[in-house]
Image (cartoon, rainbow, N blue to C red):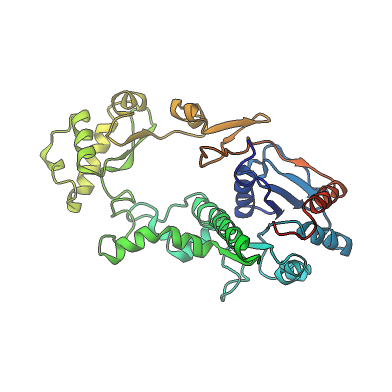
Length: 369
């Protein structure tokens, strides 16, 4: 299938982390994404976040290369770049220069600290950005250092994902106004936004500022991961009373100490008792007893196990492209579908310019898209 973004053209300035993730999402949804790389950059079929895109080598340090990119941008709907503030301007490819060539261009900028602010030009990575927003402080066990949540919160959830949302919102607006705009996506802002639920709980007096003491951060006995007899783990999330009751019934928990589910003073002791219980059986034995029930249970699967799980296989949650197992596009569309992931490929600058010139001629030159 072509995907809901068929006909949308995107220029991606190749980088790492959130920018490529954003461009991958757009390509998954059917946008034609040209990935601009430095001359000599090899194709890597194992680079999952470069999938379904063609890469074009352009030397942006020379005037002919910059002119070529500007010509491509004349027929683009979006540009995605993830350099530090000022880098694109120093290449004479900042928003003002690009939008002078294409007033409808949506210029997506992905940074850690944002385009403005006292830290805007400082180096950093995901862990630094989520530290500043408060998100990192909240993740971890009571009395221990914060736990690094890979780079899900900053790079991907609060970064590339929100940039994609901003780009699509701006695309919708541009089709009404005929004008593009600049999207300033910062991982500090995005990871703060992802914490909205917790900030709301805190404002209501229902969230402690100490990690590991709250219902959703591992403080509660009924919302945590537990080790089993074989060293593997299971995840329990029985928050609602009826699900908590089913967990107790299926596990044979009759101890009256478990009756007051929301008594936070009991949580540390009840966690110890549940930990002892789950160590009495293997993970697969607990799956036989609890998986697929309303006890809010799931096995904790590793990178090899997850693609093979029957539920994930039934839904096609993972796919294979060029021998690389990878997550399938998400979410699902009932009618327009998504693009089947393909490994990245290369395209010469001459062919890219020729194809996009032909598109311009076929669309009537500067006719609104």
